[in-house]
Image (cartoon, rainbow, N blue to C red; front, side, top):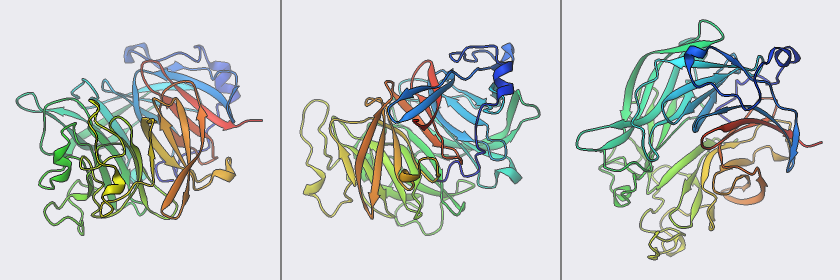
Length: 389
């Protein structure tokens, strides 16, 4: 697990509960209202989990854990970044967030703290940016985060260090998921096909690819595609989750068309076939050759039909769910579930699906092994999951 290695063990203290003045459904809508303290709900049972609620957010898209504090920073699609302090129950605001192009699937995307954040204060954001002639594209920005108190933070010197190229019309399939390599040397960014399909097979652009960059956004040395120094892999559709497993291998989950969502082991230089092949069909019913018809292309470890509509994903590394260590949990949106996947070498299989009754956008693991999720959509709840019983 890479995105929360420095996450402190999170529990809401009795003192925080005593100070709480808002219900578990409270949300912060206006920074002028000041900090809101959110009382954790009484625990309740859901599937194999004991669950507590910790407030709500407006169309949350991503979350990451601030190293050194354990605060959970959450992006909202419309362009806000907020943070939740598990030790106090307080919600706070982040200023200095860039303007985003909101519409369709576009808006503010991922957030990730730099591997050296505790020394550098560097934070990365991705978002949809408008261009000329009604075009848009995903961008990656880098800035400095400073929190002078426990109620507000500010991002300064935010600058764009990478742009999806070229910008296109439409407002879909940005992907813009961020993950760092386990050694902290490289940055991988998912670049969706923007619903244009064919460019995912054209390496003169970065549409439908995963790019591998240095931490300053420049192309990393040794990338495998001779015609484009940024590209690590290509033939992708719409990647919304990426993480490294315990062996240091990169995996992704991506949306298929009508059927054919995929769980992929991402290898350098590999072509994942979109739109030449898919285990789904076009939305108008037109057939697409199945992945297996082109064995020279990278094959998915799992495909799902009906789809799960994957969001975020994480590999578990803690001891609270000891039997699941090394397994992946995938946030399911249309499936309203956490999808539990077990690896077997380069193969994988779904071993369970945990119904959580709402669309799940984000899944994180704390160092104590507790699982945190964010529901999708307006009023998306932040929840902490521990083993039932």
